[in-house]
Image (tube, rainbow, N blue to C red; front, top):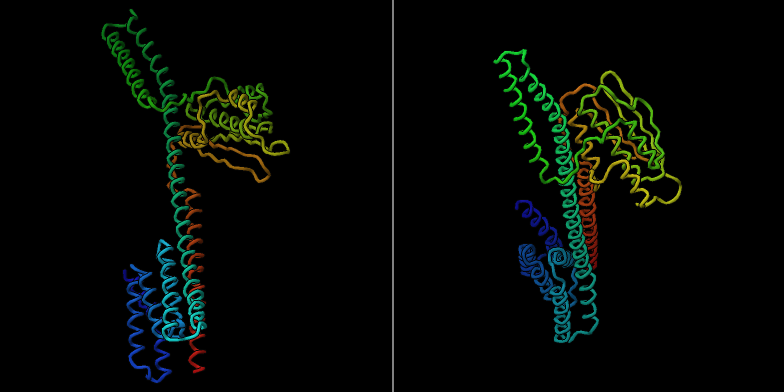
Length: 443
């Protein structure tokens, strides 16, 4: 509110300055007219925010009372400013067009009543067209452009929110699959514990108390298995996702299946990846599976390289899909779909969220995933995982790159919009001051 008041005061001072200068140049001989003009301009400034068209009509009526030509050096700047504000702050164009037509008709009646020639009316029409209507059109353009920009930001914000929702859902689905993997692994281990406890329960070499303890252990293992099954069942009740447990085999087996389906895949490093924690092993399997699937779907026929580099503390899996054969990018074909299904059975993650889920799985395993296009063409996915189980790193609370780009684009558009508004206004004000000075000098 305070900023608006300061702006209105500055605007009032700007449009009243030519009136004051004209009165000073005349030596105060014009009497009450400058004071009345300043009062009308002040009222116009006060009305310009809520009723901009009314303010413009008030100033045009003031101009007609001074001269039927409508043009005066004292009020030219005010006509241009209020014309622009009417275009910028009025939603409908028809009322303004009616006001312009009414002003032209009033000027014709005044010309006829004062027995002036038609050149006077033509002068009024010229002033109305170039001093009032051109700024009004500029204001209309700025208003429409601002509305289009606002609509674009709303759509961009909506898309950004939808992408975040899709990414969050992919992470939740991947966590559910990981929970399923844990159920299968822990359920198997608990079943073995229950089986061994049952064997101890019937072992005749043990005493009665030891057999009862073994029976209690067997019952507790069975109860734990049932509770684990119930919990995982709740997590997987509505996700509709296939379990992410590997279908058996190693990275070498995955590469061989891809080759059998027709992919050109080269494996380097230890394809067995033995001695890893279960979570890490599944993450390695999932990285190779997702990367080969994406290569089969998006770059069919392109060579793919799978590299496993192991150190004392970490294992790095890198899958590189080089640029495809020359020619236009291939679209989805039945052959590409067949190869992709051979690498990853139907029911796995899809819809563009596979890498999001893979990133969540690797993060929970304590690793880091990097992926992106290569400078010379192609795509690379690289996952670095600890060989020993550890705590997963926290999720980085960063603004997505698209949000940062959106903020920068907003700043650029605001800056350009301000330039588009203030440069014409400054040029119009300078022209008005120049014309007023010339008019005062030639009197």
